[in-house]
Length: 429
Image (cartoon, rainbow, N blue to C red; front, side, top):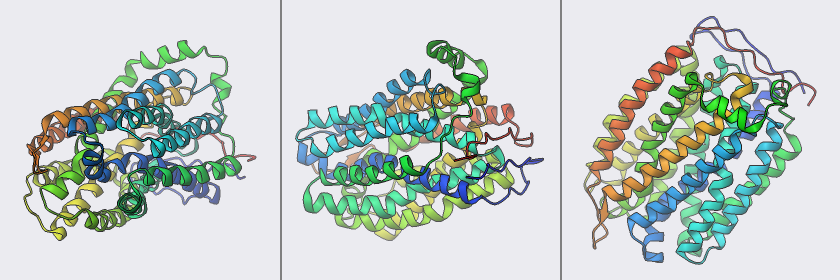
């Protein structure tokens, strides 16, 4: 395989070179992998309207199904952080991805609420580390001037999961039971894993600096670095919005807006197609005009749209589609810009540990946010979600605080500074 191209950026508006064939293949593999991870989380939202009555559970219990995954992922990320830079990133990635596939299979076989909770814990213990390992690979392979585009393409996993995964998941759930979507995800993830094992080259140039570091010493060194604290705090708050809003979105749409469950795939599919278009576009714009600028623009729109969305009553399908498209396009945009910007914070020898700690804190914050969201709302006997606007205001406050923290990250990592050289991880593969 050819060596990764390393452009030198002189400004945030510099035009980055086109991806090489090897880089395009690497992005495609990571995007497919992220698709399965995202789908495993996102499929729970539309299944909420089925799971709660089928398992006879309340919104607070359903919120726990979501949050235990995040809490388990947070614990696993911390435990894995000290080892994240001691191994070939490909091997590290595939170990945890294999555990994720097994955990998802257990979800598809779980017969009761307690066993589903246990299966989600197993899935979270492994799946939560996969994203951190993937983004460490991105930071190793691509310079900062290209990461907006890379993150935008990888974030198309959210759109793809809505276009393909969620509609198919709802169809399978309504025709074959709520277990079927998890079995589908496990099958797709297995295929993706085999392709990555066979085709991805080793990602191990960082081992020249980290091979002899003691895991606990490396973990403490990374976690205690004051330079990294602002990045940790920003990513924690970044997760709050999605984890608070998504778990009860389907129940809100079905019971408050009176849109039939079998029409939800239409809304998710249209939203997903638009996300597939806007994700790469926003990523390219963030490379050209500045990642923090794009983050602020998309975050500001999110605040307005989320508050409007949570106050909707008996909205027709077309209106819900428009609101959903705008909201998810901006959510994807802010995740793309933030991910690209924060990826430049850690030094190369700390990337694995930093990403693992950051992912753990993000998952922990998201798990707590999901559980708190279940306490902010309650489901009336009619099925209606009461006090839903409370979530909108909570998400807005978190978004404003994240904008302030991301400004600190922006000052810490000026986008006009020359990009750090990307590791030649594609050489000789």
